[in-house]
Length: 161
Image (cartoon, rainbow, N blue to C red; front, side):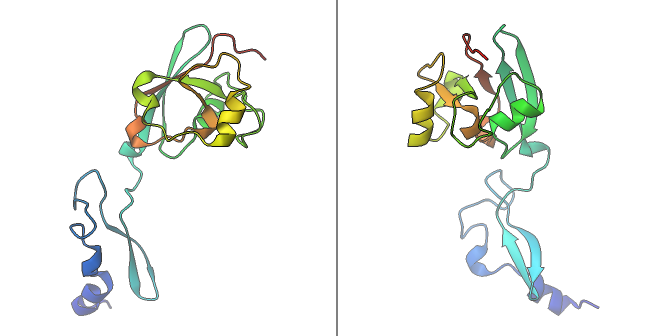
């Protein structure tokens, strides 16, 4: 039986890991410290938000005909996987290994600056892309994050198979 004293010892949050000590609110969107497991009778804490309904983001693909395809997908997925899952006409011949440019998309202006800078390998592959623009990225390198909610990805007009 778990006594109150033992429960307090097992589930007590170390002072160095309080929400105030690590700069997060105890109930805000920037992170909630929550128990994630017990190892060797010690509680393991994490400030990562648990995925729930707010662990989803809205993504809109615009195909070559100009049709908008709105989707809702989990945070952490890359846009190539999202497109393939929903039968969007995006090839991804190298399966996301940065060896081709067939998952080339054009990102909307509002969200382009929210993406991390592309790696050198991505820039090399983008040089081979058809219909390259100043907002071109490879779908396999765009990982969905909460701040990208509502991102619009356009397939280039002259995308050829």
